[in-house]
Length: 124
View 1 (tube, rainbow, N blue to C red):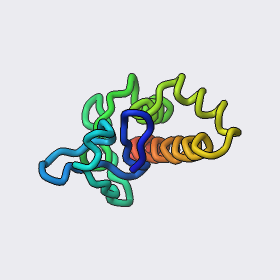
View 2: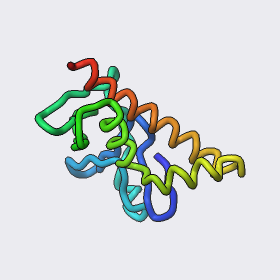
View 3: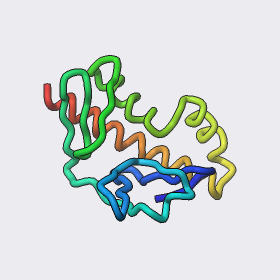
View 4: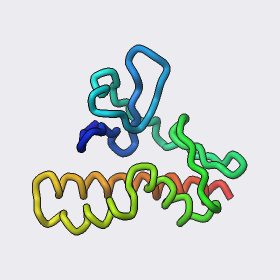
């Protein structure tokens, strides 16, 4: 789990579970981060289509515009990164330090998104 600005995020292939309640999420406000623990998703990653939605990791749902590989992958990426966020991270990665770490985390998230999208493809 890592923090950026006012938010704390689960690493790729993980989620955050509130210690004292049945609440799971992928991000929380940093001021609440102490209430959560990071939990690894079961592997191989469970992915399934439910109508117009994709459910993955046992808890999480995205509703892409179509079930194509590209649309599913993009929907999962957008759970964490806007287009502007992605551009800024790519452009700043050469700065090293925290910027390089953010780039590596984004790439790990993109790999995670690709695995979710591949799970839908293999279902067809």
